[in-house]
Amino acid sequence: MDDRIRITLEQGVADVRLVRADKMNALDDEMFEALRQAGERLKHTPGVRAVLLSGEGRAFCAGLDTANFGRMASGQRGGERLLQGERTAGGANPPQHTVMVWRELPVPVIAAVHGVAYGGGFQLMLAADLRFVAPDTRLSIMEINWGLVPDMGGMALLRGLVRDDIARELTYTGRVFDGREAAQLGLATRVSADPYADALALAREIAARPPKAMRAAKRLLELVQHADTQTILLAESREQAALIGAPEQVEAVTARLQKRPAVFVD
Image 1 (cartoon, one colour):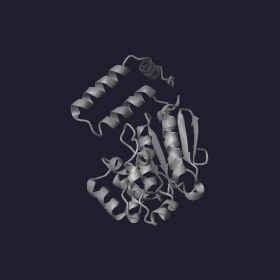
Image 2 (cartoon, helix red, strand yellow):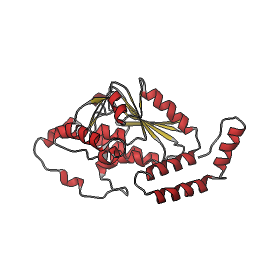
Image 3 (cartoon, one colour):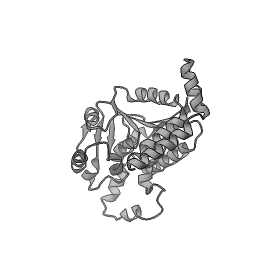
Image 4 (cartoon, one colour):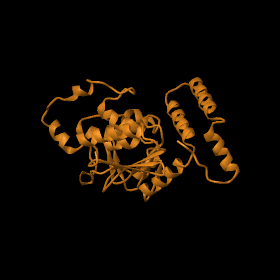
């Protein structure tokens, strides 16, 4: 996996880098598998409190490797595999799992995006909780240009981020837009001259917060995407009941009252 993904863990932050820089971190079979393996590994890695996802070199991720399109040009039919085989508990096939595994992580994920985020790379960016994007980054829901549709979870992840007509316009045209417009549309959390440095700073800040409360907050925020009000209200109560009076919450309150940094145990 080291020739596609590199992971370091420091101060509670898992720094995940796509390292196929010579190909602008394009998605070949090995990158698909490495992203899945990395995400699944981090779900169960002790001490992870936040994840930073970025790409080395000139780009975050240029999307599907052009070699794959060359095979498609032959007219070979291979789409049946997307409907065959096992799916994850969340309903994803393997290509979708490559992206959705990052949304499934129990801790906040921040994407630092620069260069380009096209097609599959754009969908990977959407899986993060937060997206810090350089102003000159070029982004595109590019699949229509190849006679395809977004099929790595992009449709599910777009929901709630932008207006329906905006999602349609970007999907129907495949046009390229920059980081500034991404922020205006709601696709970028923050426009940053140095998205990696700013995302790392925020990831470290998140990692210093109460980890059990942070995971509970993420569970609630995921729930509100699809649940009714009654379900959400009950979930709030259950999460809060589990936190109140527990050692982590006692330490959070005590540290603030004593005006000292809190020390939390995972």
